Amino acid sequence: MNKLVIIGIVVVGALYVLLSSIFILNEREQAIVTRFGEITNIHSEPGLYFKLPTAIVDNVQIIEDRLIRYDLEDITLQVSGGKFYNVDAFLTYRIKDARLFRESVLGDLRLAEQRINTRLESALRGVYGKRDFNDALSALRAEMMREARDIIVSDLAEIGVEVIDVRVLRTDLTQQVSAQTYDRMKAERLAEAARLRARGQEQAQTLRAIADRQAVETVALAQRDSEILRGEGEAVRNAVFAEAFNKDIEFFEFYRTMQSYRASLVNTDTTMLLSPNTEFFQYFGGSTMKETKPALGQ
Image 1 (cartoon, rainbow, N blue to C red):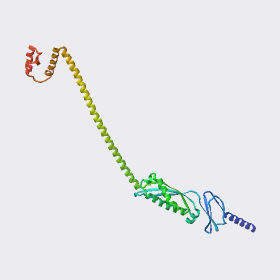
Image 2 (image 1 turned 90 degrees about the vertical axis):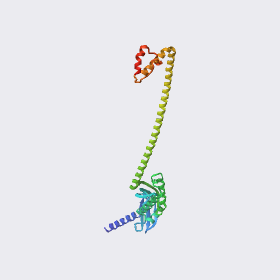
Image 3 (image 1 turned 120 degrees about the vertical axis):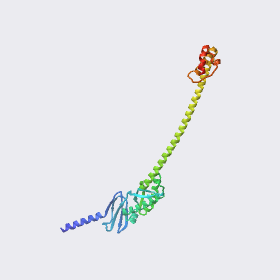
Image 4 (image 1 turned 90 degrees about the horizontal axis):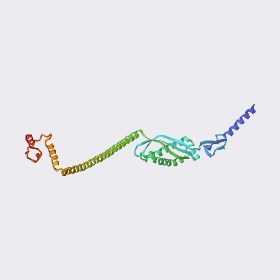
């Protein structure tokens, strides 16, 4: 019975010694081996490794060997004009120097990210503080991210961290700036609307003036054409009268006299005092003259 207990203790001890003297790394890990707190070895390749048994002598600290993302959310940044943005950004990094990482932040990822937070926020404040209000929303945004990355590269290299990239996810106006921006945009749109209305009125007046001028020209041309046609008509009429006169002068004189009678005596209240012997009454005979004379004398 005692032998079985002893054998069991030996087997358990052997297993403990064996298991505490080996460790396995995958492709996303690296290991720092320390002996009484001093770094003795660093392993960065995946595989099976050995160390002195138990954690009393040799201790293994596993750290990340992959790209890590750190998010910085909802920070308020001021631009050169005094206005503010609400910004979300993130940084990707990897632990490049495990020894330095252990010596500077004790290999603790939380301590490292506290320093990353401070450095990244400070870099973003510096970059935004030198820029105008519209730069963060323009093509200059990519340049601003590169500037922030360049600022923190050397600082984080001191703790064994390699900065891969810095990106800004969101750049929004603060509530106050949003209201101011809306008011400014509204004023600009109203000014643009007024300018377009003024231009439309100007064009309308121009078109109206053109139309009025064309109307005057059209009326003038119509009047000219009508005068020409009237003149041509009178010329034709005179030619007809002349031809008629030449064919029968006595009849033509009689016809013209009748027209004069119609124009002078019919439907008129005009009183005429003429001698019966005048040429105007040449076609009135004896009795006719006697009957007409009293009427003309009224």
